[in-house]
Image (cartoon, rainbow, N blue to C red; front, side, top):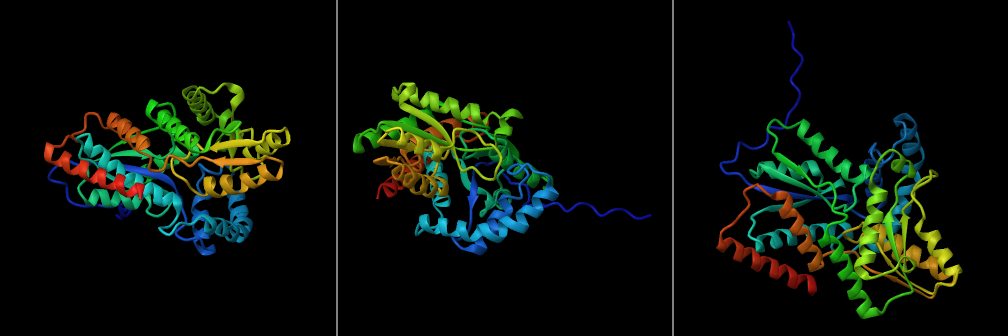
Length: 367
């Protein structure tokens, strides 16, 4: 009699002697470098996710490998090169900084929590970070997507990666998942503070445009709450700023392919606004918690050019939340809410050390 071989499981480290808790801040991802080979690897992983592209696999495989990955990587590499920072990809730089500062902010509140960051596509991967957390003896993990609004293409895909890792693990940590925080008071207040600070320094434009990442319209018909959550974020933010409905617009960017996506589209809307006589706009991307290709290149460069070419006079891009103190405080606030019941409390000496660390990080962020 023969037996089928046992599935391969990652055994990880021996059981920890004491429980520990971690937060894994998960963002979409980024290529390792602004080069064609790096973009080809990144796009192959990103666009192979069935949550991202819901087309029958055989058909999509031919399109992806026969057309897209042959031509798109070079063009995308040039775009990434235009916004690449000395430290690397902006998305990775801001996500890493947020994870470090979140750890400090939690420490100030009296919580000992290990905070790491991971990318759904690219490095460091969710699986590699979970492997490391397990090796470090972490037994409880809060999964915190960097997406305020829930979408199957983003949030659920992060959860898929965690489930996939867990399916190969022998001993699985306790997991908790944050689905969304699109309407939490701290998040809305942080956005409002960011805008008010920009207005105090630069003045206020005729119109505020809130541009969210787009998704195919059919996802709304299938029950994805993303569109509704974007609209709620915009409404709450407008109310916080005291804006009437005629002073702001909600749009959707980053359309890909020929299918109908959530509308109105950002760039065509800006062009129509300029042609209708609107001379100045402030543009914000509330769905992105850190600046990236979609905000720095697509909006601050491409959309700006389109608006000005159509007759607009002033285009102001308001940066993402990035490392603003109001945002980190809000992030810590609802993280603590989701950590409730897990042993994370620290003694006064540890809290003082965490406070010093947070102060040093805040000082470094201002320089």
